[in-house]
Image (cartoon, rainbow, N blue to C red; front, side):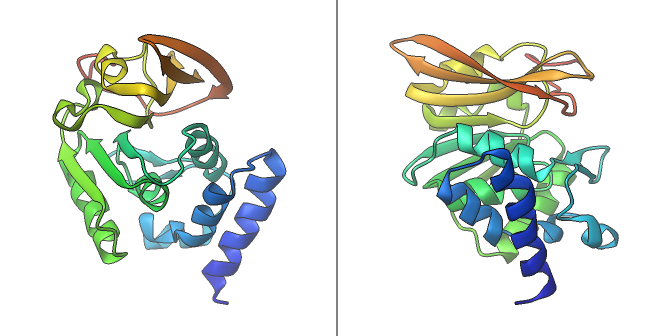
Length: 214
């Protein structure tokens, strides 16, 4: 077992399972995906620590527990078409690709998207489609989606994402002010939405037509 495999195992044992994450598929994906490859080499020693880390363009890679919590809330079984808003480093994308049939991921910052695409390609993922675009508009061409995850804080839930969610689909998004949000899960049932609050969180701003202004 190499150093990073051991670090991943410790991360899952101490940060993920102990905080109540129970989905075995999520746990196994987080044991597998090499988080250190999604951050700068100078941060590899911190890659499996219990906090977010900076990436390029003033963005962040989320705390491992938050990745696990949001992913578990999507209730992925393996046959889903999943939409991710905010590719960022590509780490969350890799977790989704392990657990979904197909992942569609949108990032408004093209250099970030290119970097994530290179890492994900190097790791052998071939079920991910990428787009440099305003994520608050979703990706209508491939809608509806079984699951939608938004990895940036929004002032409100963008209507296009609600529209692009399949019947029975799950949407997970941080909603609130610029400095703190609540993690909201929506489940679409007969055209209406059941809302669950999963607790407080803090994310970078979701920029776009239906988000914050740049």
